[in-house]
Length: 220
Length: 220
DNA sequence: GAAATAATTTAAGCATACTTAAAAATATTG
DNA sequence: CAATATTTTTAAGTATGCTTAAATTATTTC
Ligand SMILES: [Mn+2]
Ligand SMILES: [Mn+2]
Ligand SMILES: [Mn+2]
Ligand SMILES: [Mn+2]
Image 1 (cartoon, rainbow over the protein chains, first blue to last red):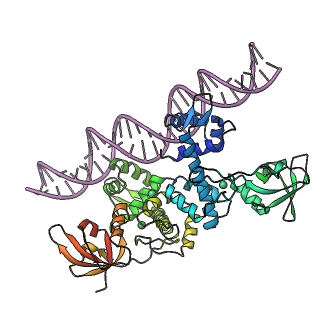
Image 2 (cartoon, protein in one colour):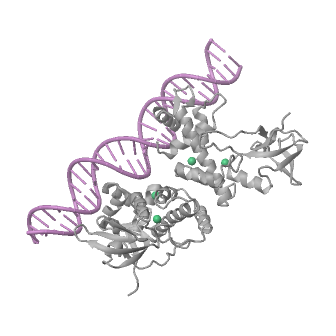
């Protein structure tokens, strides 16, 4: 293996497996913005190389080799994000795109060195967990999208969707960042939008926005 | 443009232009370890895209657009090398290969940030000059290969060939690094090898090795 | 300056990773 | 459960960047 495309396929598969550990071609095509036909092609190759279990029309699962490879790609991506953000000072809405390219161009040795410099971070700048060198994932706190909170409730942001630069740039302007507390002042039924309070300021945010911000779920 | 191969061609052309600002296909093929036929193909594309001046059998020159692109690639490469060496702590014999990949995966914004962190370095870990953001090259000191020194002369190392990991690893073991002084104790005529003294220790080094280590030429 | 040698280009072909369009299989719905 | 809709696969084709072998052009040598 030595391939940007294949690495992106594996990473995408890994990050989008359903609870049964499977994924369908259409979802991969959507996430990678390519045709389903292209996905079918690549699935055959990944299967032939032993990275996935694939039978036509049956869905896809990772082999343990594929899972290890994919998990390492996620590790590379997220360590780069932390490094770019914390050490290089790049804003959190720019690091994802940069990491998406760097992840394919760095040796494991480099990644391990960055990890040491960062003192073994457990989460990336968007709250996503970073696999450790030996493949372990840190515990993930119970969470739900902001859109599922009720009127009057509040929640502490612990994760945000990192795939859209505009989204991140916009919520930054509202003062939304990890660990920030958000209060749901009102839910507008007409369009499912939310009136929220952040750092004492009020904003109206769309349902779609709220679906991409995740808050900690307090133990019952 | 968005291409690893093309970027490597341009960088290779830039770094190997003869004093008249030209280069022949065979040299490019050799440096990139590919066939001359492949080079001919690519030269047509680079020419069509306005990066080089190319007429068959006539040799190659960079357009100003091509020169700017190529110089920026060299800049990216060398800034990465300094960063990996100084900030990340990677040894000088490993940074070239890593930078060879990272150079294609980093935005100008990232490179500029690294440059600021490094306080605008002028030379990479092997003594090669780093083009500035506005395309200026730092002054290069007069230099010649160690192999051209006479018996009894000595010289301060200001540049080494960075393209071979084994070479760099080996000379490191001999204590050779930038700014180190090397004394030519004896030239062995039979095989053109040199008996040299470095930090008080004596070594015999081959002619080929000595041709890849450059020392400052003192003003006459 | 002709013959031999070396460098370069052309030609044909291959692997990769995509595309669109058509066919086949699966899933949904009335 | 049959008709319809959706998803997936197959088929055919494209661009990129290589390869080897043959043809062409340039350079060197006598
Ligand atoms: Mn990627
Ligand atoms: Mn992230
Ligand atoms: Mn390169
Ligand atoms: Mn270097």
